[in-house]
Length: 344
Picture 1 (cartoon, rainbow, N blue to C red):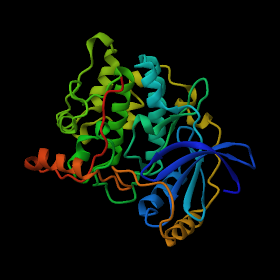
Picture 2 (picture 1 turned 90 degrees about the horizontal axis):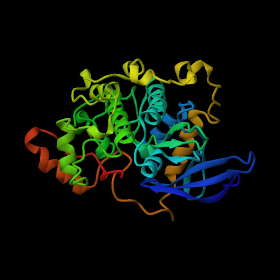
Picture 3 (picture 1 turned 45 degrees about the vertical axis):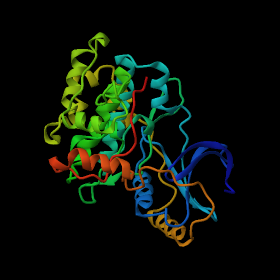
Picture 4 (picture 1 turned 90 degrees about the vertical axis):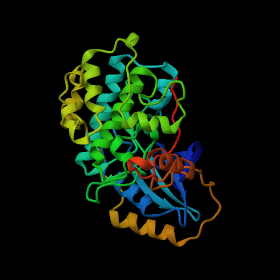
């Protein structure tokens, strides 16, 4: 930590803690994720780092470097001062169509960039969508802990957060991560517009089994009093399609009339955006540090958090629910994770 000055903790999770620090050489604020050395530094941590490293886009949190302390592997990233998009919605209740479109356009362009770079995120949600803190906030996609390179085999694990999971992910068969990310983007758009999750029963929002059934049946509605435009409802209807092969794709979303309205020029023409700085470390350097981080046994550090591990497996209670609810339908059970709930 010689280069970085600790300021305060800004988050925690299965990995450990995230801390706001100041780069002493540049005075720049950065976010540093601390992962305890030893068994926690597994192949999924390495995958997260390498996938994140290759992504340099204005709508993706910037990856800076990895370093070691005697007790932790540390990942240094761009600090998004505006916090989570989730918190902004909680404060507002819901967004107007124009505001929702503004953030959705950036999210789609960022996810499309990730896909074109060979990375499926697999856990897109409001909590993983940060803002840079500027007056016209720029979306910053973060947390590539469940990401999958398209060079790997097709994903089969049920990862993600229940309210955002696509139907094909729940079925525990090989699926296209591109389509699953599109579904999650649709959930994000719905929440921005409505202020609630589309597939949760508003009378029992924390009932995981009900949420799963509604996702599989694509059972959602838009409150008529909100007066969401026909074009926007058409886009949502084309996203929320159970069969991934029939679901709208990212390139098709980017050509949809609702998406194109008031599209910022830098999103319409990415070549106009300033070049992003390249990674400071080579893949070989990172792999060497990750390997060193595995050689030290677990030491004092943040306690583990119950729930999903780095491979996205949910805790035993959630697995039992999936077993009970979908055994007759041929669905497996080692996946999902996290309770949902209305935003407002």
